[in-house]
Image (cartoon, rainbow, N blue to C red):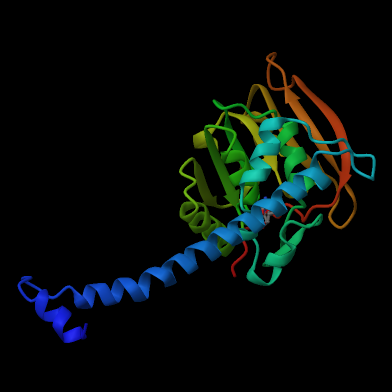
Length: 264
Ligand code: SAH
């Protein structure tokens, strides 16, 4: 039947359906191709995360470092899309077993270290956590999967602002990012059940000990800049501010905790 004849049979419609039909026929297959390739990509990264947990985090390490066993922590590592926290040129390496540069001379920690620090903090759903050294926002996102509220401080303003926007875009509503010197902690939000410091300090900053709740846990790399530092677990008892126990965990290498906000 000629097209004109079809058209005339439908000419009693108040408007012609042909433009709509045309758009549907052209656009629908394209949109489903786009969405199926996006699904394919999501599946690709999900598999890389599964592999990362299976080979780098859940087994005992070749260095002798302990495996991470907390199932909630392993699930958070399986869930957070690490490839969205690294610069575009590093996306292919996002799930590899090493730290990556994130600009401004800073790095996103190795996946194992993120998982191990998180496990050492023993996060619970009702906890409030402070992170010093937001960087890309990745560690904050992992924590945000596990606790009620995360406050995170970054001294390099562009990194802090970028991380804030990234975490917002990914839907993390329980993370608050602030630009400033984390040595002083975040007194208005204290006390915290958990404090994670993701930059190396020559000593444990006293304000952070003060802002830790009795029974709280702090994980912090301690040591000199450029040298190998020691990841320490600090637990605070309930007999006052001096009731502190420290445990050495593993040798690590972090960027230094700096003291004055840098102008970029
Ligand atoms: N946790 C980050 C990586 C941390 S790298 C992530 O998941 O990506 C360490 C970060 O600590 C860097 O971004 C550095 O700029 C920041 N930093 C260094 N000294 C700081 C300080 N005094 N206060 C807050 N952030 C600091």
